[in-house]
Image (cartoon, rainbow, N blue to C red; front, top):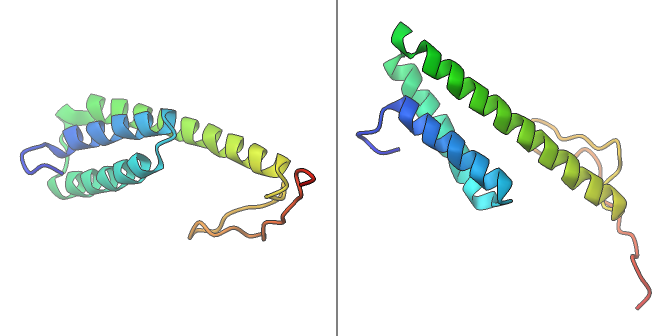
Length: 112
């Protein structure tokens, strides 16, 4: 985060970058924006926000919720694709560390 950037400005920038990364399927940018978002949130907690920031915090929450919905959609798309390629069971879930609860199974997609 830039030293002269207010944490809410940094958070807004990170949320917009997160949205762009989700729309463009840019994994590296998504990981970077997530780090920036968490850093901005930590800074906001340290500095605190006042009552004058309430409407902005609500707007940033709405943006974060919209990004969360887009991320959930992307996960459904990926899971659908993997399932149809035979690489993921329909019941697979991920644990808190992001590890899959099931082993992928290979499926022959054609005859060589």
